[in-house]
Image (cartoon, rainbow, N blue to C red; front, side):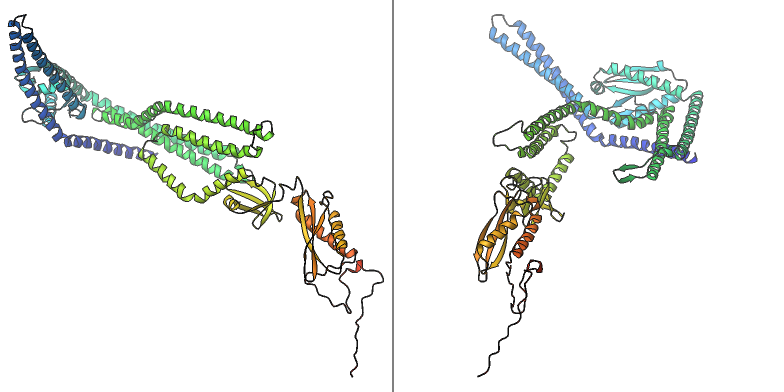
Length: 624
C-alpha cells in the first residue's frame, strides 16, 4: 500500500514538472517567432497605409472621371468609351488591392500563433500586431498585467469597463486605466471592425474577471480542497481493493486453478511444462496488477488537476496524451479502410484463381484433362511456378496500398533486404533455376533408382533446390540441383519397368574350355536367378580374347532394377555353381597353379567320387 501511494506521488510530481516545462517551451517558441512576426506586421502596416493613400487618390480620380463622363455628349462615343474603360480599370485595381489585403491578413493569421493574453491561465485572445513603440509581446504583457490589476480592485464593476474611441484606436478603459488599445490592424487580422472587436474583448475580460473572483473565494477553495481529499481517498481505496483482488487471484491460482493447468506438448516434445505454465500465469497476474495501478493513478491525475483553475489545462494535456494517440489510430484506420478493402479484394481474387489452377492440376494429374505436349508430371511444378508468379504480382499490386509504403524508412528497408537477398542467394538462385530446368527435363521421378556421380540410390524427395537420394545402405544423401544439371544422371528405372533393364557381368575363362559350353553355363546361371526374365532370353557376348583367357559377358533382362544388387549377388553365386558342377575351372584373372601334387580349383563337392589329386612326378636324368 505504501509503495502504491509513493508511486502515485512520484507520478504526480513528474506530471507537474513535465506540464510546466511544456508551457515554458511554448512561451520560448513564441518569443523565437517575435522578430519574424514584427517584420511581417510592420510590412503589412506600411502596405495598408500605401494602399489607403492609393485608394483615396483613385477614389478622387474616379469621381473626376465620372463628372467628365457626365459632361461628354452622348454622340462622342470614343471619348465616353475611353472614360468608362479608365473608371473600370480603377475599380479593378481597387478590387485587386482588397483581395491582396484579404490574402495578406489570412496569411498572417495562419502562419503566426500570436501571443496569448492569459491572466488566469485560460487564453482570452491573441495579440498579433504592435502599436507605436509597443511590440506584440509587450502589449500582451501589459494587457495581462492590467487585467490582473482590475481583478485585485474590489469590488469590481463590469459596467465601468467602457469603450472609448481615441484617434486610430478603440480603447477599453476602466475608470482612468486604459486596459486594451485595439488598432485597425488588430481588427483586420480578426476579420471584424475595431469597434466590434473592442466589444468582444470587453465581454471576455468582464467574464474572466468575474469567474476568477468566484473561483478564488474562500468557499470555492475549501470545496476544491475537499474534492482533492476525496479523489485521493478514492484512489487509495481503489489501490487497496486492487491489492486485495490480485492477492486473492494469486492464492486462487496457486490452490485451485493449478489443478486444471496442464503442460503443452507437440507430439513428443514438451515445450511448456506444468510448472512453467503456473509461473507464467502468476507473472501475468502481477503484470495486470501493475497495469491497473498505473491506470488508476493516471486517470486520477487529470481529476486532481481539473479541480483548480490554475492546473485545469494540465488535465486536458494528460488526457490528450492518451486520447489523441487513440483518436489518431482510429482515424488512421478509418482513412485506411479503402486501401484495406482494395487489398482484400486483390487477395480474394488471387486466392480463387489459385484454387481454380489447383483444380486443373488435379484433373491433369488424374488424366481426365490432357493437353498436347504437356505431361502430367509437369502439372505440380507448373502450378508452383504460376502460384509464385501470382503471389509476386499480387504483392506488386498491393504494395502501394500498404501503410507507410511511401515512407523513406520503408523504402530503405526494402532496398536493404533486396541487397541482402541478391548478395547472399546466388547459389540458391542457381539451384532454383536448375530445379526448374530439371522439372521439365524429366530425368527421373520419385522412387526411381538413379546414379549421380558416385551416388546410387532411390529418389525420395524433390525440392526446388535439392533432391534427396536413399542409397542401398539406407544412407540419405542431399544433392544440389545445380550439380545434377552440370553432370550426367543414370536412370535405371525409366526403361527398366517397360522394356527391361539389362544387367551384365563379366567372367574370364581359359582357352581350354569350349566357348559353347561357357555360353550355356552362363545362360543357365542367369535363367536360374530370381528376378531375371526368361523372355527376352539372356545372351552372352565375348568381349575380348586376352593373353591367357577369354572374356565372356552375360547379359540378362530384369524389370526389378531396385533389386539389382541382390540379383547381381545371386547371379554370381549361380555362375560359380554352374561352372563348378560342369567341371569348368574359373582360373582367371591372375590365378596361378602348379598341377603336380595339387588339387584342381573346384570345390570338393563337385569333384568325381574317384578323383585323386595327382602326385608329384620327379624325373631323374642320369649324368653322362
